[in-house]
Image (tube, rainbow, N blue to C red; front, top):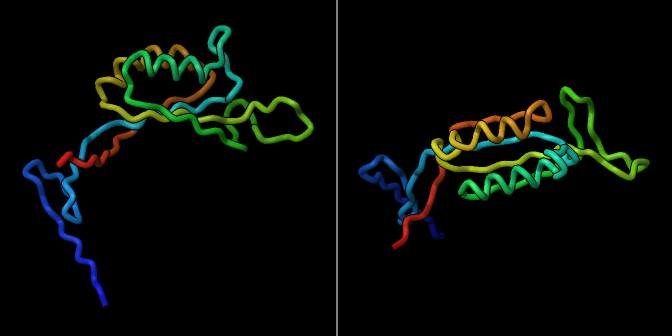
Length: 131
């Protein structure tokens, strides 16, 4: 019977790694923007405007998640097969350093305004160190 033994190492900067691979723990922020898929910023879809703004400001990356049901201050949103258009909930997530997200926050708040909700939370990102 073969038993895998996981070895834990502590790097001098208190970052942990396992299984012999060197991993670095980085403190970062997770930004989430909750909105509806058909919300607009000017003549453009708000989702597209936000993604462009994040990219143009050097944010590492972003992902849009589309919901199929949800509710908030603007009521319940759900898939309705009788309607041609479905204004469903969506969430944009991006991860980067606090300073970079703080720099772009005033613009995001202006863009989202009363159409959605912006949250930020502390996270740890684990990244493999190059050998």
